[in-house]
Length: 340
Image (cartoon, helix red, strand yellow):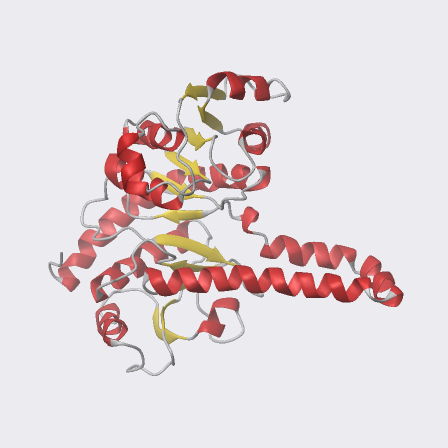
């Protein structure tokens, strides 16, 4: 099984992406198609020791930048690295694609060339959020659909429940709707209607959950659904808060020699906490509900993030996540009715 990697996008250039691909091959035994400038990628590969049968380079001559208009660029720049990588999946040469570049362009290319799974109304971005203990909470939608209908949220819940069970290994994932209170009637008109729909779905729906529940400090929940506008704000606020906490901690330690001594003693603990909160451990966020596996990486994805992205894509393929989603959505439509 080959995984396509957009090697020319992201903040750090192709070197760390090539390194991550080599790690995926060397440590996990996976196969990677690197898409980008052929000569540049081949030159970078010379720095590494790897199985040459498991990495190949697919040439592309264009790069979609972070500030380019997604819908325009995807159609105008057909030889861009992200479009070519997505087309490898659409043409069944690869099982999935990873790109740390322009999120909108990755989504637009996936929808244009890969299309949606049968019955899926709107593909959501599923973002893992680390919590105090255990596997991460899955938040969706994390930004793909700003405005949502209740039926969209219900489908997000179905897709997220399958992902949480098959990839994170949670036997009976608890599913909740992000709201401003736990009571059944809390929320806006969309979440209240989604609540009524989800009560009819045969899975572990626990009702409304609040923001604190995402991090393991409130109700126990594994999958949290909301519209993409809210989800993206939650995701960015979470990233910003985690970074601020570490910065405050580092600044406080620098101001005291006693604190510096204590920090040395707690170095392994701090490293464990940092690892648990590191987005690179999860690779990125999946765009669920498309024909093929599409993972969107952080712009600052490092080699570890690339390796783990390839790993997660491979796991999704092995666990037949898309097939399970398509079957569940078909069953779900009989409960929800026809919606466009």
